[in-house]
Length: 350
Image (tube, rainbow, N blue to C red):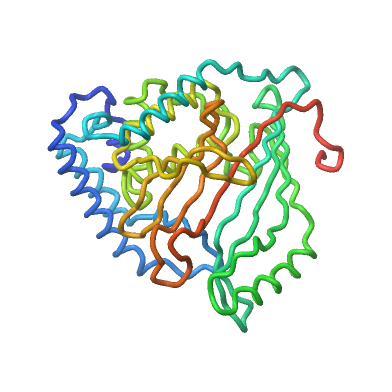
């Protein structure tokens, strides 16, 4: 059993370190992550397409073990709430959203019915066709039907990608037009499988996974720090990404959503980033956190009237050095909409 596995089995209720110890330890952890990232990047083969989200989810075994040992030796298990969290404005918004959400009555999926989750996203890709290369944004959307009993058969349709009309490099528009012509020849991908097992062993996130998370905000955030250890650009940054992704599944219950909002309020560096923000035609308020090294801010867009998360986005806070974004550009966004339906359209069933 390696150190990372051992760390993830440690008791979340271990004694809290001092604020200074926690701050020093997270600084040391981020330095180790940067070193591990530098060592790992040399071994990663170029891919034809990549999202702009800069998550280095793969570390060397030695790097992951070193991160785990660093946390153990500096007594940082249980650090949530020890270091200063979100700014007062952001914390107020998140806690009010939690208060509003917790009063929400979640819709019930009756026998024979399905929870339909429509997931819409835009993100950057880089690519080439052998003649030209470029970076541009694409839509990648999917719809999932989840049965009343999540252990029964799920259905999903993934639609071919298409250009989102944002071009970041010289030949990007020409490449996007070429890729759109190729995509127009592709049919939607139709998937099905019991308990979301669409790919024969690579099971997807399920409602049980999401709604089995701890409800105490500190315990929840400590859990997130442990399960995301060694991924992303920083522990705090990846914690907010985890929260955004979990809220965006479309099947977190009101109590889960409230706990996630309260956990986000404990993350250092989270601020109120916009008095109003529009995402996919819906307006809310944005809170977010900047990764200074990359100049990219992760935002959650929240409807303060309902406490619902409208979606999430990544925004460039400065001109990016590789020319793939200017200050203020939205580099990616995604949103999920959930409704209860009586059936799956016939063309998407077996």
